[in-house]
Length: 389
Ligand SMILES: *Cc1c(COP(=O)(O)O)cnc(C)c1O
Image 1 (cartoon, helix red, strand yellow):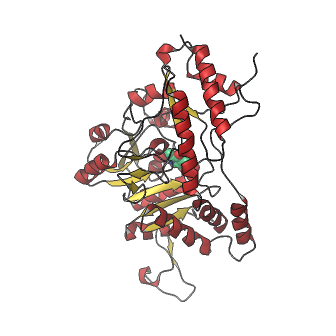
Image 2 (cartoon, helix red, strand yellow; image 1 turned 90 degrees about the vertical axis):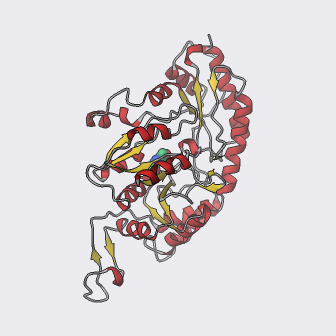
Image 3 (cartoon, rainbow, N blue to C red; image 1 turned 135 degrees about the vertical axis):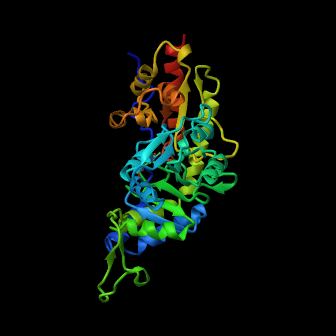
């Protein structure tokens, strides 16, 4: 066996934590509030300002935030919600939590985002909402999606877990839709350990989200049916404990200060990848969106399997042999066993299924170095040379 390109393993994503982040968490630990304190609304306001939304409600994680958005949108038993199959299970699980039915609309083979023409085909009287995902940070075609939503009176909940800092037609993702979700899992653009948020301009959604996050409880005298005294609160619907802690919020605030720096590093590494990989005839490098700018959460290449002697699994394994931690995003959601048991059939979204066989995600995160990027390029060239027909 020859030597691997790298001596040490390079993951596909990883957080960036510096002394400033650590100190901001320590400050909370020394203070009065570990949760339900002042750091949460500060972080919410900062994030809302950053994306250009009126309100933001922080949650314990992005999945809980999506659940809250489905509740606020009024998704209930039997309602259909259209989403993409090429996403993490959370984008569709949040529909199931509310008793709704996820309906998968196939992707556009070029952009890998949900295809508005496919959405149109899936609309019925029961359709209540659309959950587009900005896959890899590349904005979904929001104008077309809104046109459909307005025509059929549907709510749009953007899953922007990949898209903090991305723009669509000069405006930041999170400033436009009914509700937009961002995630702060450590592989995402900024982290709070676990964490998520919904941004919205709608006061009614905002208030529902706040109440949903804390058991459905309100302490607002104007909203209560009775008033027994200063201790009194009312639980008015079944909510959850989905609160973010002040520890998480302080870390989130500290990270948000660096978000543009993080985005610039991602963009720099992407242009290195593009330059280094564009000549390789056996792969397609990511599509560049002309309607907006990607926040480059992931760098996904497509293998031209017809030109290769190995399949994706062999190439994936060969790259791991080189200590390059490539990954695959995503297994089409409805192919997962739980969804298969619900009755979704193979063949439902042929573009997503075909694409799933061809994709590999290369490492991309701000804390990697230029040398790491060069190693990945070398390893991809070495492995593909080996498998080229
Ligand atoms: C990460 C992610 C989520 C869920 O976020 P969590 O904070 O991990 O719960 C949802 N959708 C997509 C597309 C994601 O990548």
